[in-house]
Amino acid sequence: MIRPVLKYPHPSLRNPAAEVTAFDERVLEVARDLVDTMRSYEKCVGLAAPQIDIPLRMIAVDVSRHPKTTASHGLVVLVNPVVVMGAGKEVGREGCLSLPDITANVARAKRIQFEASFPDGEPIRSVSPGFEARAILHEIDHLDGILILDRVASPTEVFARRSR
Ligand SMILES: [Zn+2]
Image (cartoon, rainbow, N blue to C red; front, side):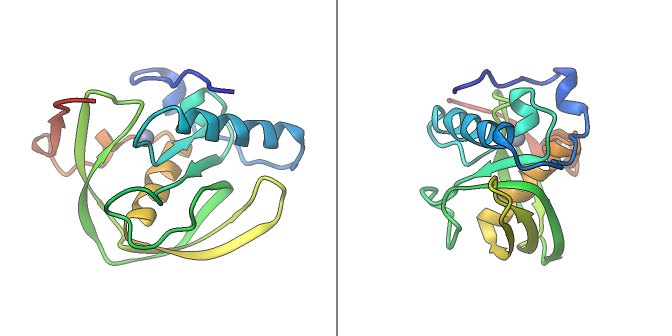
């Protein structure tokens, strides 16, 4: 089901999300809603459950059709994602459905190793490069109540969006 995306400064965007402890029907439903909602926005490469007002540690990512993507896992929904290693640092421009009027330059690791589970409970441990790593890190930030505004080095790194 496509759900409304919360916009800054909605207070729910600031709450840390809870760990998923049981892989039940609810988790599968949230996974479907994340994907449906993400797919309803052209060019959207990721969405976190708190953005659709569900306080659980779940994210959807799909950078496979983005021009900056070099390699990716395709569409994945990750439950309880944790970054276990980050390497390198690169500044790149990011947008966010919860902050529809701006983009911002944010420094992120160039490559990450992460652990998570799929919505059916199957564990995944993998490496993600480049633009996908950036998307995963952006979405994990949402699980901790962190927005791109918190990640910019200075206000001059925030830009008005010309068009949507
Ligand atoms: Zn975002």
